[in-house]
Image (cartoon, rainbow, N blue to C red):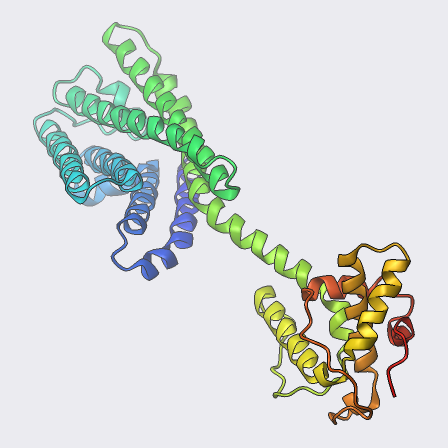
Length: 388
């Protein structure tokens, strides 16, 4: 039982770790700070709610059930963090945000104080690790403490869920951010199920019935799902964007391969930077782009504008579109220039020719066009002969 709580706490810790760099970079950014506070509070709730941790807290303090107000205070703090996050997300005038923030601090701070007062005034001598809510449902002081934390949690979840579902329609179509908001919305909505089954079990005790299994079995399972969804809601937008960017970088790196290989023998103007096998895809892509652009700059004097224009006409006559003809002609001209002995030796052109303008097409289009040339290494045949 305790291990499941610790697993959820660890998962929330991963979410906190994902957000920590943004929090550190953000400095005084209130939104980043609030997200970090929320995840930290959620992580603490699940850690201290584990039966083993509850027993440890009770043993260390020597007070039976002392862990109960500790856990309920952490849960109340988590509720306040949820509301404060919504306040920061929604924005508004600084005065309005500040006023609402202090209202949340004041109301939920008062709830935490009341929890401890109720606990201090109650009779709680029998230690309960899993069924405290239902066991003490009719005990003065403990009864009020249980109701306070459940009602405070319910109010926070209702407000947070309503605002999240409103925000969901605004971020629809924004990829991973939309997925994250959906996960958070479902997670907070399921929190209402947690509150409902807890309250049903407590009310059942008031009326002389026994539905303790709702509180001891169903509620913890729902809480576990809620913890996972909330953690994923914060992890997915960041992790998903990183994954998509990595996949995109790898795809572009491979797509630039034909052009990089065609220019591999062109002397570089600068010293090559070593790139290892485990270098990040983004850095490998930047390195390949830099090498290609540098090689094309070295080849610029060897590109014949007249020959390229004739090649464009040749491709147009073959039925290519103007854009396709331009890219194919540039690809053929680049490979032809790269094969010229003078270019390979880093020397000026052997024969004067009207220098080509800068390469107009993007590197990806040129690299893909190389695959459509009949013979990359003999592609200068696709160009009309240069002028003498």
